[in-house]
Image 1 (tube, rainbow, N blue to C red):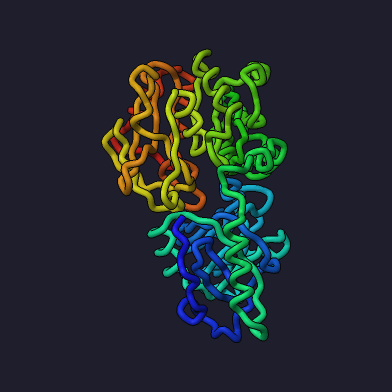
Image 2 (tube, rainbow, N blue to C red; image 1 turned 90 degrees about the vertical axis):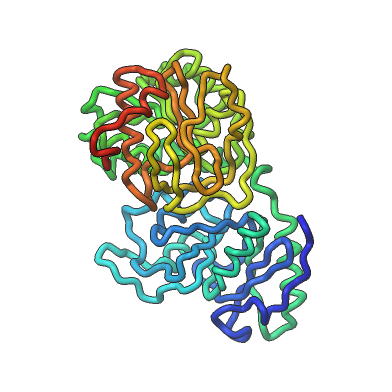
Amino acid sequence: MEERTLISHQSVLSGPSLFDADACLALEDGRVFFGRSFGAPPDTDGEIVFNTSMAGYQEISTDPSYSGQMVVLTHPQIGNYGVQTSAGESGRPWITALVVRDLAPEPSHWLSTMKLDEFLAASGVPGIQAVDTRALTRHLRTYGTMRAALGAVDTSRPVEPQVAGLVERARRATPLSDKNLVADACDPAGVLERTERGVGATTAAQSGLRIALVDCGVKHHIARSLAARGVEVVPVPWEARIEDIFAAKADGVVISNGPGDPERMGSATELAKDLLHHHVPSMGICLGHQVFGLAAGGTTSRLKFGHHGGNHPVHDLMTNRVHITSQNHEFQVDAPSIEESSGFRVSMLNLNDGSVEGLAHRELPAFSVQYHPEGCPGPQDNQYVFERFLTMVARPTSGAEALQTTDATGPRNG
């Protein structure tokens, strides 16, 4: 990465004067931002990405796909409605740090149980507020996702040496692709417990279908979306083999979202190949979609600054409709690598950058989506994907045929 000149604190300080600042966010290219700390004490590093959702900071914070990453929220006011017990996508926050413009000092919502500040502090996650998040986001859009460090600054002492140390720490941070983040994010027991608590154990198994959910760091609303449709959800570890799927007597399999580089998902890719070989009805979501791309003999690559937000337009090539989707990923399946001989076809494209948003098999009961059909945060109108999957499981058809299902009113809400 091009090394940039360290920018003076006066040109990047937003909100407080330097005398009010007690924290500094330093990027590996030398750009720095000052602000005030909240949550846990500022002392961390990782990759930094931005999310354009206007709400859902709790769901974003607790999404395991963000493991190892700092998140910049582009919406200026954060924390307005506090934190709710039932809104988490996992049992704890996974972000490395949270970067915001204005943090609400006193949230207002009848379901709120604590402030965002208190929630992050209790989980050991630092945050920095009063940052010019617009300038930071524009910088990341221009130069791409990069590593960063967040630390405390003492303005009673010379600031430049402190900032230089943080920049150097950012440059030494381990890249995302060098970490096996899925192993830490996998928690099948926790997924099952929170799913039953959120949906109700009596709801499950009404359809008679049993779905094995391969936990690569799954958002719990994916499991709840399946259970709410009357199926029994059986979470299995990300290293599960085809024998484990047979032992679970699963009628179908979902390979979930999760953090990190799909190239490190060798065992999940082998499972996807075996699922295709044995004609087991299967669906991949986000990281699971990339796993199916690799299983099809394709390749993956990193996006410049990823897709993170609740307003990404996706063109469904099977129905010629456009869906507004929730997304959170750094990698993509390379469209030219999906060959005709694999049996898969590209079924959806991102209208912002043309990247692959879906794959569908022409003959086997398998398809995948890059976006999050469960939303949270984001639109809920893509819940129809679960219905098409379960229809495919109950009456096995090809993935391409399953995705062509429409009705006069369009996709239904979950």
